[in-house]
Image (cartoon, rainbow, N blue to C red; front, side):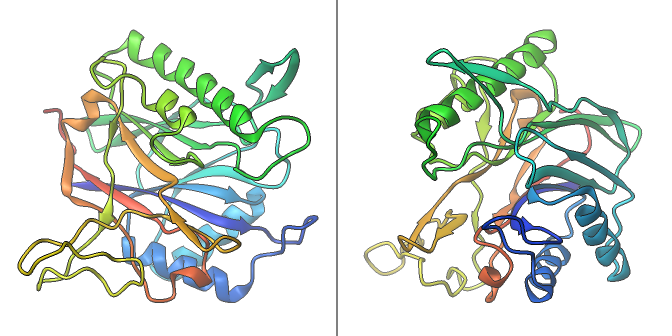
Length: 294
């Protein structure tokens, strides 16, 4: 079995840029603690700084016993934060999407952070395609409505997914990262596609793990079902927005129908650590897979 994770690192920058601060040593330490706890074989990263910042994180993890020999770093229109991939397995093909664009009310926009698309080989018998994304944030911008920008980025991504899955309906494909909106949003629905179609994606919907007693990890956002003896409701939020003190599921691990056959649901969860917020405003999530075609 192998594990794939996604983690928005919240401005993993070497130096402050505009309103974005440099990442502190304390925050970096919590991020490494999270990644060591997950011990995922492949990690998709969002809000990564420069290539040097990625290599600094990779080197620090290796010193702490978690080595990722293979990596990818992709830049889009945003010059400050990027998407990246760390992998224990060989990356055998790279198709970075750095300049995708769309028209909105007659004006041309580029996809903010681009998409990192790689093929990864697990042993001799399993190959999958991974696409890492970070769609437009929900912060207002003067150029256009943020939700419409995000939806158009999602449409560009959906066109890419349609191309890949029409060429190979059995493709092992995982699309993961920060979609920056809830499941019901138009942008998220565009990425998911129609569930009854071979082109639609499966939402793994990771949640917090339960301990042996059946109780959720001690977290202020957990909720219990009414009545004694009933199972706790699943806690799936991945992002805390401090300004409004809201908790939302903005991060996703989505699978093609082909890769969903190898998905191990019991090894799929949102990581809970007591000091998670010192690392990022997002929590990482991970999914497990069998390394064989089923």
